[in-house]
Amino acid sequence: MGKQILDPELNKHIPLSQKISYGFGDFGNGFMFDLGQSYLTNFWTDAAGLPAAVVGGIFGFTKIFDAFMDPIAGSVIDGRKKIGPRGKFRPVMMISAILLGIMTVVTFTMPSGLSMTQKIIYAYAAYMIWGLIYSFTNDPYGSLASVMSRNNDDRNFMAMTRQVGSVGAQFIAGVGFIPLMLMFGNDRTDTRGYMLASVVFAIAGVLMFAVCYLGTRENVNVHRDANAKREGFKDYLKVVFTNGPLGAVILMQLFTISAMNTNNQMMIYYAKYNLNNIGLQPIINAIMMGTSIVGVFMIPSLTKRFGQKPVMMVSFIIGATANILNFFIPTNVVTFIILVTIGYTALAIPNGITWALVSNCIDYGEWHTGMRKEAITYAAFNFSRKIAQSLAALVTASVLALTGYIANAHQSSETLKGIKGAMTLYPGICLIVAAFIIVKLYKLSDNNYDTIASDLQEGRWERGKIGDKDNH
Image (cartoon, rainbow, N blue to C red; front, side, top):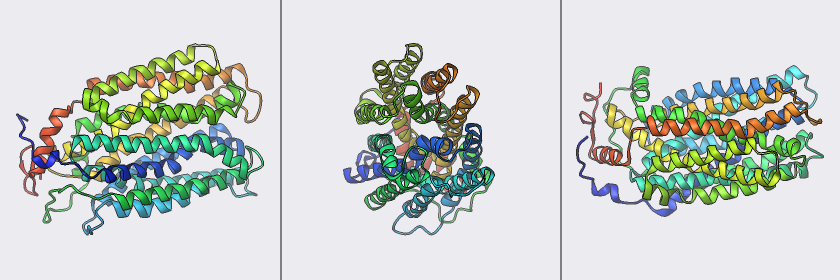
């Protein structure tokens, strides 16, 4: 790529208010998305009465279905031709967020009087619709960062605000959902309590998306050829499968997201059965997620001093060590809290940096192919996240089913060991693999990205000027 002469425009920063407002989107997203990842398994098994194996099947099938819906959603969004003053991504994001709030409540609802077969059909249908709408909410939200700024410091800051929003929502859901559910319902098996608590979180989620919508702008001057022909499916494949950095990020996410989601899903089981006190669940989550928020605030300063890849690699190693130690050390409340907090914080930091990597991958894809496809690129990334979520649900449900878990009963030693392994050992192994991937396979350095950003700012791609004739 040669020695770069950076465009002065790339050194300009967007207003701080926009970077903070962007993080509110994942704050709202977390109120609806992370709520389901943490509590929907428990709702279906302990309140709705669905067998653990069936719940695993629901998560596994619907997440794979959702993953294949992401490229479709990305294609629809990228295909928008009439882009008004509100931008290409913000209007789609806001409308979809409202619908997502409605469907969040629907997924935490189980109508009375249904047979087991009808309950299963209802759960499948509700969660599949939820996932489709989530694609149309999250794809434009994720793509938005790439057109807000090309300044890498801005992107790292937005990655931080986004991860703070995400972990902040996890913190509030982890601390507040169970007490709120118990306040609205008679006990942990009352479906009404889950439904009313989800209403509160869904409303909060939509309001947070509104802050993001109103507080952000699409500032980047994207060079789009008005006369370019509409790309076909093979062009979308070209954008995705020729993007090496994106492939590395996708592969890494399979392990990091499945690790985090398995941790979140198993926490309620671990507190209730391994620690014999479900009241510890919100306390542990408060400590674990509160500390991780502090860690995430360090992302801009850490990446500016050491670079994105070194920070991620060290974090993965620390997280893996803490989780594996937590598996082998005998169950103890104090040591468990200390090590799970270290492991979760060490995972939250690289997960936050990943958002900046995705925006860089979008720019790399345009520079490498001459075609800019923000939503389809982000959809490919989101595809991996949903496969990872499916994997986490499969791990959780399989461990419970294979070790003889019985809802709301005394668990066998085999079941307790399985819960502990899913809670600690599985995330530890995943983070070791993630460290290998980011070191060996992700080749887009900070310096290389600066060159790419400068070229794009001037309307150039790898082989010339951006335009229809150049890239077909």
